[in-house]
Image (cartoon, rainbow over all chains, first blue to last red; front, side, top):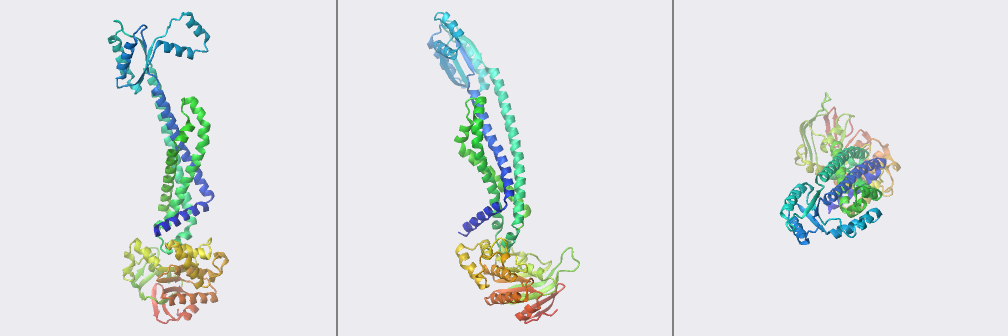
Amino acid sequence: MAMFLNLQRVIKSGFIAFWRNGTVSLASLLVFTVTLFVIGGLLLGSAVFDAALTQIKGKVDVTVYIQPDTFETDILSLKQSIEQLPEVKEVVYKSSEEVLAEFRITHANDSLILQSLDELGGENPLRAELNIAAQDPRELGSIVTFLENESIISRNNGAGIIEKISSQNEKNQEAIDRFIDFTNTVETLGLYIAIFTALITVLVTFNTIRLAIYTSKDEISVMKLVGASDNYVRGPFIVEGIMYGVFSAFFTLALLYPVTRWISPLTKDFFGSINLFEYYISNFPMIFLILVGVGAVLGIVSSLLAIRRYLKV
Amino acid sequence: MIYFENVSKSYFDDTSPALENINFSVEPGELLSIVGHSGAGKTTLLKMILAEEFPTEGKVFFESSDIQTLNKQELLDLRRRIGMIFQDFRLLPHKTAYENIRFAMEAAGRSEEEIEADAPHVLELVGLEEKLWNFPSELSGGEKQRVAIARAIVNQPDIVIADEPTGNLDPINAYDIIEILKKVNEMGKTVILTTHNKGVIDALGKRVITIDKGKIIRDDAKGKYIL
């Protein structure tokens, strides 16, 4: 009970010290907010890059064009044998009719192409295809090797059923590698900025707490006189440090709401289907915990450093 | 209760020792005045009782414990048994008389019920029941010292130490403060005070230790101020 009472008093004293410091507290809050905003931005940016990467990796990696007049049973048999490969994530079969229908929809506004198709007199110039997605783009090579062998093994009345294998292997891989390099660079840079701003935050808060210790020197001497415990004397300054962190986390979260809302259409244009605002809203509890946690830890570290240096109890 | 055994204290930057071969004891319930010129070593002696300073030679005992060997918790416990009064009052300027008392009680871990009951009572004891909500700036020197006494005794210490409690007061207020300290002593508390004030010593008619240049030159059971 006495411990709870003391804790209550320590927290109350921390709040009083926080308000008493006025504009100095405000400076700490601002620098804390900048740091947490950078960390929040890093979290969101990392999510956007990861989602974009997953999206790129998930795109069709290999398209197999089937010889005309191939029996569907042979195509499905080939599909089945491809699906059994551990490197393969998904195989989608599209008949030549489906491919043609898709083609017409895609080029619905291109009258010249549609007219050319009509001139063929009902003949379908397009081939049935198998669209293969790999588990990992780096395994595309082994899938293509398998298909090249399969074109010999599979028979369609004695002939191979694969007309052409179109692999985006090298081109895709190069793009993916470049994107990974880009995201790594951005994330590393972001991390350095976050560490740098965190150091500035600790320094500014350290000085704020030092000032709080100085302005509270009379109270501290009275506490010592009546035999208050070390924790009772130090506690309010730690509470003050935590408050800087937690309040700044709230400011940052409030700031991220309009920022993600504003920036979301831009990221959608650039990265495709990722909606940053929706990501922020749906992952709010996690982002909240991370920012409040980081803020509190930075506040505690700053306070402990200042107390250790300037508060002899 | 308190026992100084061959205590000497030297500082690195001083050629002569602040205290030299001090021997005396204080019994429970005693009222002891320590007199001497400025720089005689009175405050150093008090700081040793509070364990803020330690002897370079000899030992200071509180009850049966050597103060220098106490651990942190035991030091806290010791300080909780001592109430301290200063010449410059050391009240918190942004707190009222009541809040100053309350703050000391909170820091000592007293419950809300105890604070509600004891804080007004102790202010009444020093005759400030009508000044509960006055800030130190609204109080006279004598009233400030009364608040300081109330703060020193509110946590029910066994010993009250007053370092020049009348130093900043006019004779009338000084006399009032001494009367209150006598009352505190009659409540069973051990009171140790340092002073320059001859009138105070003569009015008390209690034990007086006289210090000069760090040495005890006189220890009279019913002493007068002789220097």
